[in-house]
Image (cartoon, rainbow, N blue to C red):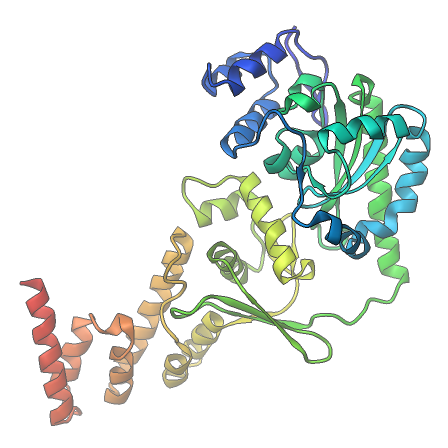
Length: 429
């Protein structure tokens, strides 16, 4: 019988040959297209492909988080879902304690924060490292309900042999993501793990209702508890050859600086240019025409929030929630005001020179071209010489020719321009 997908990603059955399909796939005896012709649900087939591509070992369960033993308590105490534990325990854990079922709460990166429920089931789950502190993201543990639910940002159920890891296949699970009610940011997931009965429509409805109750609880806390005065403004620096940086300032005026990866810098620049927000698919297209998908974007956004703070970025769509200044915006604003001298003074060099994002490349060209045209339009030899002193001005033959031909240039400037033009011509010959 072919497995079908009901509302919310619920498996309505498991084909008898599913384990054989899994064995052939992980052994490399069939290609990825074979899965499409099998009885495997497309959602699970895609997850198996991602699991194999990221090197997940099909013979292990969750991966130990780095320094999990020393950091778990800190992660728990700082996590927004900590305040909702009484709600989760009341709605799920109390009934699970003698029903052979486990209730797990994960962080957005897939780290298990709490695993509670039936004591016998907990001891059995330890064999697959389903314990607090372990990494049960899809990239760490392969196809599993909490990890894949986080990767796709959707509720789902994984039944038995649909798991990528063999050691997890005796179990079934249901997971529902939980979001910040104010920003839409993904906070983590609530998961029920147990026997095949866990992958039922009734279980999905129960976990879904619990997630809704948790989000309502968080929203009520926000209304009734005074918000601490937190980060106010932030600044993004992305021009020139230095590493891109993010600096935020808290209420006491203390700066907090972070060096950004190239991908995170790309994302933040694009969000500053799209205040209306960007969907995961649109952002993926702007970052890379071919190689990115929405799952990768969600993972990057999760990592970005851990670096700069979740209070800055909302989801659905992704957008900035707080004022963010940038050196790019400074240059464009100065040009808009007609302050060419000021724009040139703020221009430290090309925008993210190492970025291969097509959208960043377009913005890089737009900014450089606009500034060059503004400088040339002034007729100022001083501004022209400052432009030509920049790395991108060294090969600007039109600019050097203008410096040579300008009546306002002195003999030294003309001589310098003549020599530079000769050098450029020699390179072309």
